[in-house]
Image (spheres, rainbow, N blue to C red):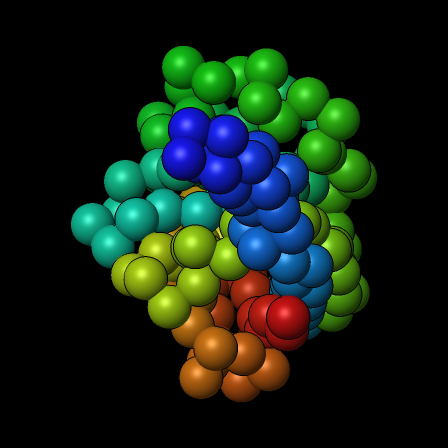
Length: 156
């Protein structure tokens, strides 16, 4: 009996990663044709209450401007090393940024949201430019932004 339980436990431990594998999610953010410099963007995950969970991407390499991505900066303040290597150049007006990340499937259809904060130098900040519930039903459905983001979509 003990051997059977041990074998079952070992098989379960080996098989578990196959059932909880990360899922590729592609986020596409298109900026509006505003007047001004390139935009700084933070694309991140929050729980249903808007509490920061994880950074997916930060556009704009000058960290002195990250404070303008207010909601993201406050949430990620204690986890700066988390987004090392997950940054790129700012995104210019009318351009599209597309990123693909590995996401734990437990975040899908369980109240989590993807948020995009945006800011343009000398033009102002737009925290929560996008708030997109992370659901299978909402996948591939464009969401209009509230500031510099024209549209945002995600696909699994």
